[in-house]
Every structure is written in structure tokens, then in C-alpha cells.
Image (cartoon, rainbow, N blue to C red):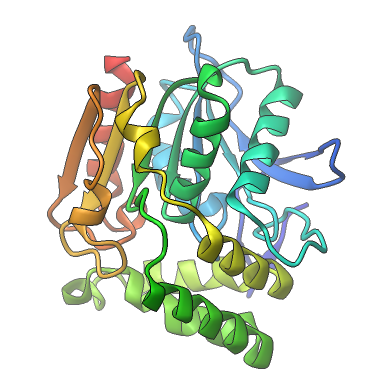
Length: 280
């Protein structure tokens, strides 16, 4: 199951399950419950893997059970032939994983793409959540310009492969005034991205383009909701993360973060996540 790029692991997944749909999901599971009734599920972003969360796992796994899957088409998970991976498909994958692990309820937090999946899951399975949240993500659908950019991404991946696309993508995800300081993290995230399957990257881009407006999922939820934004995020502005607020919403803005706080300021993010978990 372990995959490597240039001798480095590109996923922290150490388990694998085959879902009833036939999708094989690789996932990390810290397993120890620490006496808590819930688990924390962390969903990574586009062209990422469970390894995006490795620093957060190091900070938090001693206090709560953490599950971090590789999404279909990413990391060590399989890449089904469907031309479009909708957010609903990803949500069903997550439901199947929780079923396989015997987990009735969880806290689900998603980064970027993972946030879109989290909202689709919260819409379909609110009774399976103790809480949920978005990290550098948004409930808004793609704008017309963003949809055009998804098409351009699919065309670029089709023509040149994942590697060249990832090389262009990753530097945009970090706070631009800290790129030199973040060079090891940039290299690490590129290595992780190279493991994304070509078909998976294209199918996921199509799915993100097709996702609906889910502001109502946050506004109408009675569950605790966490919204984390990066003050220097060049991908999803703070206003787009905070565009929908419910009655039990916690907002956090990280001043030093771009789009990748789990890599840029992991200790600070872990503290915010731990505080949110303790509040539930």
C-alpha cells in the first residue's frame, strides 16, 4: 500500500478497505480512542493525500482518535473509471469507510476539496456527525471563471500529466511572502501531489466544477461548525470561507497562513482544532 516518490512516502495511510462500490480506500487510523466517544476525520485537499495532515496527526493523535483517508484518485486509494467524481461520491466513500470501521458518529473537518466533501456528507448524513468544519474551503459553488479554470486544469492534466500541473499549483497554495521559508514543505507537497492519478485529478476537477451552493448546510445546521481561514490565502479568500454562519459556528482566521495551514503553521492550527474538539 505504501507509495513513494523520490524515496519519500506520499501517504501516511497504513490501512486499506474495499467498499461495497468496489473503491479501495487507503486510510490512516490512530485507533486509540483515549476514552472519547467520537473520532476526528480529516479530509485532505485536491492533489493531496492523508500526508497533508502528518504534522496535525503528530500534534493531536495522543488526545483523540484520528482517521485520515486518501480520497479516491489520490494517494494510495484506487481511481475508479467514473469520468466525474462528484462531491456526493466522495461523501458516500466516507460513509462506507465509517461503516467499515464501525464508527456511528464523528467530527469531520475538510481542507479545500475536503471541505466540499464535508458539506456533501453533512447534507446527506447529519445524524452521523458530532460536528463538522471547513479549513480553507467554502460552501459557495464555483464562479463562471472558476468553472473555466477547472476546464483548463483538466485540459492541462490531459496534455501534460499531473506532475507539471502540481508543480504549478503547489506554490500558489502557500503564503507568498513565506515561500523561501516554506521550501521543504513545498517540496513535500509536490511529492504528495505527484502520486495523484491522472484520471483521478481530472475526474475530481470536474466534480468540483459541478458542486452546488451549500451555504444552507451551515446556516441551518444545529451542530457545532468550525470555519478556518488563512489571512493570506490566495485560493479561497477569508470572506468566502465565512460567507455562511450558523447558530453554533466558530470562526478562526490564521494571520500567517495561506491555503495550507496544516503545513504552514501546524502547531497553531492543531491548537485551534483541539480547542474546537474540547468544546463539543
